Image (cartoon, rainbow, N blue to C red; front, side, top):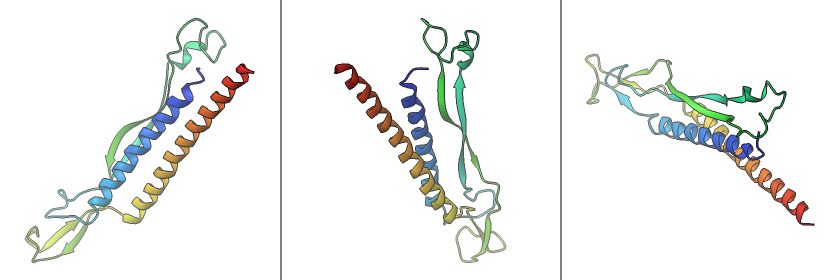
Length: 152
């Protein structure tokens, strides 16, 4: 594996956390919305991540982690967003007979977004993003230090 793969891994982690932050923002924006039926109510969405490790078995036959010498390393590593799933938590009925979207019984249905959980997800995603930035900066500095060693 190349020394520069660390940038691919951190970059994919940053992209995944950006998707997570966007999903949280969408959930928070729709936290107080109401609908006329439980089926039409907004449901909280969460990204599902999957690790990516493709073509890593190229080097297993030679006993080398880096793959066969002289051949390009086709290993893709990191994380990707596999899908975005909707929560199956029940929506909250609210009795509001004067609301324009109220059903025949006078109920509107509030989204199932939990603002406290979403704020926790936002803080976690933000810190994970920052950690990936730190990994990239540290790796860059280490590679620059290695190049400086060759100049002396």
